[in-house]
Length: 380
Image (cartoon, rainbow, N blue to C red; front, side, top):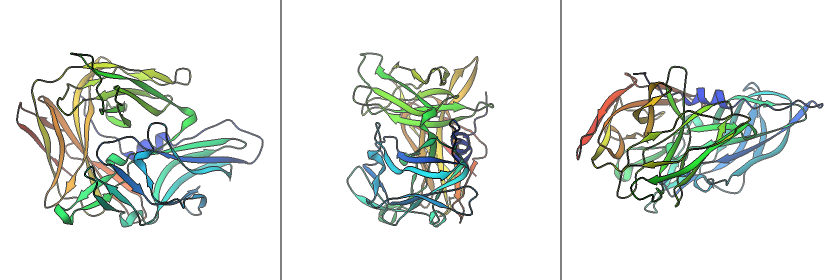
């Protein structure tokens, strides 16, 4: 069985941020920046008080691409093809820019499903701006069109318990040049009656050379069971993975076959019918030692599938660990089966740089019994 290690987001960014275009005759090009998010049922609103966005070649001098005075932006409205433009057609000298940073004000908040609103605390390390590190290639006489995907559902951590609990911003962000991306779409149904599976989380995942899985993009099916996983960089091979759950049923998970996205064929489809599990239980666990105020932990539930003549572990559930007197994660109700769990700890430095480490051991078995609770302990 292959060992799974979740790819650090910084490494994923380094792979996706290389933006290229054809060369022109002038010594400058233009750059536009847009922000999107994936849908989630975890919150009603996630409001970010964006103030400006900047870019730098070397991290020494910064150029402002745009400022925002329209008030907090609700990330959860930026789904289904809707985006917010942060910078439009800004002229820059040609060259490779190594960093971009998004500045936030103090009026950030999250609205829960019960309608209650809570302040969203920005860690001190992000006061200098949320850094996006990579290769932003502005070529002469051309326009680069960058899209920032802010994964709101997995960027919030609850610290503390009860009325004293705080909601902390722990950004999970990816960037893409939309000109060199494609998509996978399809429909998910119940195998017994062909009814649509609505509100189901769907992941686009990749495997590295060692067989380690990471989530590149996520979305939620609409009322008719349809989904679209867009902004998938061309040249990559993707797996569509989901473990459907509705208000009354949970379904056995599936992973698609390897799906290449190429310049010649940037659009692919994957539809599937799922069988409801007759046996189910809950899955969760604990994390040690407790994350500090500059840290956050994400936990991943893994299921094993056949892939290319061997097996691989794919992510079927994600959770941001809650920190109180103890630190816990919860994947909810899942089919009774054998799984694995892994964790990633992110630490934000004073300059806004985020580093990530994988739990040790990297994967831990978790068995969910029928009607019972499967638990696992992650350690860093």
